[in-house]
Length: 126
Ligand SMILES: [Zn+2]
Image (tube, rainbow, N blue to C red; front, side, top):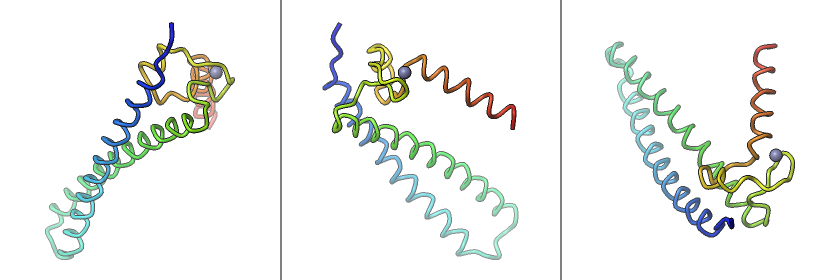
């Protein structure tokens, strides 16, 4: 079975485009929420609390989109470097089926599982 890397690359490119457009919109709307807040320093408290909550939600979403975009751009970078499709943990080729499902995957399944185990250990031990 051959993996069509060109196809994966074009999928990543359209994902990159979609995410940067989404990010632009989020940033614009976050700015306007912030400006509204600054424009009314003596607004009703309840309203302000709602807006703060709303802004926090938007910022969290913005962060998620940024993270995703960074991953997609990282994968596109690996195309440039000629290392796309190789696991960053063990250097072995990543399972093509995994790349089909997640073109921006950085690690093979076993390295990812290992990494998640490590992370869990870190959290539980504090
Ligand atoms: Zn690996």
